[in-house]
Amino acid sequence: MVRLSPLLLLYVAIVAVAYSFLGDELWGDEARYLSFAENLTSGYLTDRDPQALNLWNGPGYPLILAAFLKTGLPLFAARLLNAALLFVSVVLFRSTVRLFSGSRASDFAALIYGSYWPMYAYLPRLVTEPLVIALISALAYAICRYL
Image (cartoon, rainbow, N blue to C red; front, side, top):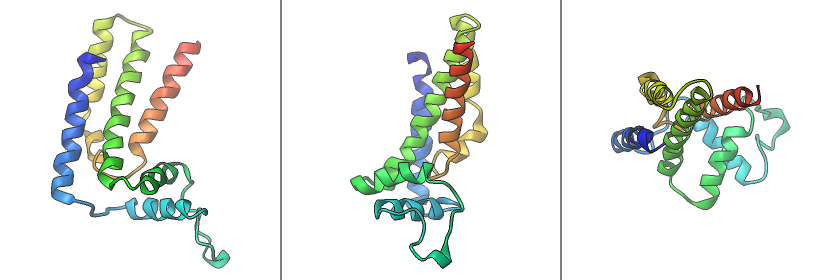
């Protein structure tokens, strides 16, 4: 895991640099996730008006954001969570490959996986993709470990 720590530093740097340019500006689905998170901190998921029922997404990711809102942490901390989640997925990927190969091969595979730059676009945003990638990596590891 120590050999992969430069990836975590890269992920945190990407979030920090993007945040220095974008600030708390919301993009895409971020406003909807934050709206659901604010509703969850008030004790409900969607609007209280039954005529305006909005179940566009489930409570999973907004529940994580609600924890940040409730504790008063800045949105930057929630964005840093994406870096941690992506790094967790790399570590889990390495562990999965390690079940079938040696340490050097698994480190190299994890480095290649962690260097897949299209994933970097989601790091500074409040979106579900880093969480989903981490959960799928955990599921793949659990299945391979079980089998």
